[in-house]
Length: 392
Image (cartoon, rainbow, N blue to C red; front, side):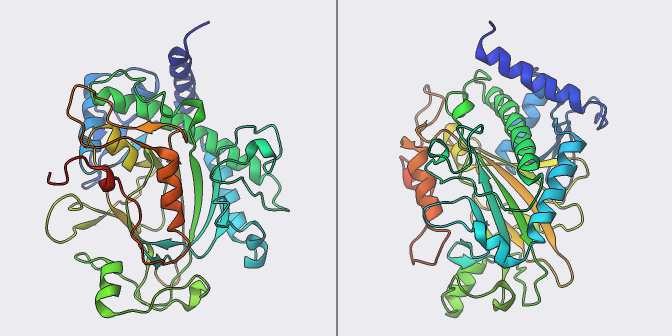
């Protein structure tokens, strides 16, 4: 029997073969331009081949801006179409029906239209679906009740679970292959992160719906909504106000850093609302630029856990989503590739002085989720809390 690392590489290769006839190669160069956000051909990395130019492209993109697009990612058109149709069908349901699978403080899986980011309500609806240790058992079986909760499947949506499962499994394979390339880009063995993720990864898939927002939209290129609200003495947000009644200015999602390892995002090709702050790790005003969708590509960004694992060589980018303009709706689907709950997160390169002290992913994840429900007057947990030298 081949060792697990070879089996994982073979799985990645099969995924690429399935995709090869559906998407043209981008040529000899592994990287091309899309404004400040690069486009990387993932084909050879997904086959377990780590050529110098591919590795260099990943290194540069992860170091700055921390966002990039990938083509030849291995997800088939059939899986993508089925998933997109399932997402639209779910959000087309009456609100009362969607709330039958509403998430709670004890179960982070399911529907929500009252999420907070940086203590501010987001103008969006969402549905979260995560890993299940025993997919052969019912979603609410005891074996499938994990720290994040359990999956809640809406009634009367034939084929919904199957479409979500197929897309979730495909995203997990893409991220596994991608993370091996990222490890190689750090000068480490490609399997350096396998022990932190592997089969025990605790990833989750989020379906997003951004309704057309009739109120005032926040679009400042040199400011942040939460700070502006504090400065103007705006009232504290509550979770009960309907999205259609939220006063302005508003964002679809306020500024934030993703907590996990990598995020793999399916963007709406018809509406460009995602922005990244190119100056998040510098000084001075924010520099918000668009992360414009690229046809046929998935969008990737570095998460907090990869920033720690890389000992700060790769920094998680701060990003936000503009509220949808009047008459426009937007769909998106980020897949958050997260470590195992019991994984100890610390810099992988033991030869370098660690810039972060170790911590457990499960604890970090739970603390971050607690801030999604209300403005409790507390700052979210951040990896900055674990920096070993605060003076750096």
